[in-house]
Each structure stands twice: as C-alpha cells, then as structure tokens.
Image (cartoon, rainbow, N blue to C red; front, side):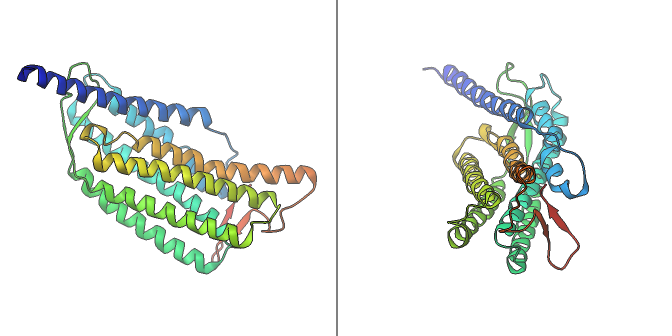
Length: 283
C-alpha cells in the first residue's frame, strides 16, 4: 500500500470514529427527551429540577458543537467549555441526589451526613480545578475530511481522567454504603419505600458505575477522536437515573396515600438536614 493510500485510510478511520461520537450525542439527547417527566414547581424540588432540566441547555450545545457544518473554529472552544461546565453541574447535582438518598437510607445519621458532605465538597472542588486545567489545554483544528461536520479536537490533556476517577470513587463509596445498610437493616423489610430506595439505589449505582468505568477506559486507552464518546451519555444518564429515584419514591407515597397506609419504617419523605432548617422532600 502506498503512503498516500495509508494516509487516506487513516483519515477515513479518524472520520469514522468522530461519527460514532456524534451518534452517541444524538442518542443521549433522544433518551433525555423521551424520558423527561413534568413536575409541579416548589422550592423543595430544587435538586430534582437542577438535575432534570439543565441538560436541555448543555446537551443541545454538544449537538451544535458536533453537528454544525462548516463551523467557525473560533467558536468551538466557547461551546465546548460551556457544555463541559454544564456537564459538571449536572453530574454534581445528580450525585447530590444520590448522596441524600444514601443518607436517608442510613437513618439521616448526622455523622454519615458530615462524611458525605466533606467527600462531596472535596471531589467537587478538585473536579473544578481539573476541568479548568483540561479546558486550558484544548486545541481545535479542521476535520480530517470535508464530510465530517462539527468541531475537531486535535489536542488535550489527559488530566480529565482524574475527574472521572473521582466520580467513579464517589459512586463506589455510595454503593458500598447502600449495600452495607441494606444487609444490616433492611434485608427482611417489606416496606415499599425502603424497597424502592434500595432497589433504585443498587440498580442505578451499578449502571452509573459501568458507564463511568467505560468512559474512563475510553479516556485512558481510546484514540483522541473518542475522548467525548461517553461524556454526554454519562451526563444524561446521571440526570435520568438520579431523578427517577425521586419520581419512584413520590409514586410510592402517592400509592400509600390512596390506600391509606404510610411508610413508618423511615418516617415521611421529608428528611431534615441536622443542624439546619433545610429539608429534602421527595413527594
């Protein structure tokens, strides 16, 4: 094979990989639209609203970045940066819901809350630093072939791996805590609220863990063209799965109110954060 043929084959392969990323972005937007649920606004649902609806801002930004023909390279970075910060905000909010769900399962114990809050803040602050350094390292260029639309990332630091390792670590710790409290306190319970919290917690943690692990593997071992393959998908699934926890618990209480029963094993769905007037309400 001539040098010219090898060069063309490399360009075609690069273009094919870039198209796979764009397909995943479209799939992520489709999932977000198809699974969105409406809810009546009130202050107690702020975490739910922050996790559910901002993806309709940053995911379209990703599609603009990935699918616009003949896009000006100068606007690639601002769009990418805005979408990246949106992804950070969305995952951080979804992780907060998962933390509060785990805290509720553990009996609203203030010691666990303190540990969870310190862990959450430390990971969030570290991720902000990592994401800032990553964005500063980015360089954009022309696509490998004219048929490839959207922006083309040509260089960037691997420091972003640290951020997703931290997400994976946080989800692992929360999953271990959920398993521990389930075996210790609730393995024989018939309470529908507990069963819903525990079932959703385990299944969603496993799914998010697998997606996060896959994203990390792509970042470490995949080619540069695939660096964003699972980022948007991970962001959307955090939104969908974490808010489904709230929706499922709300459904349990709606059913109990209709049947005239209550989940007294853990009290009502209003969890007050000790030492404050802040309440986390899932109803």
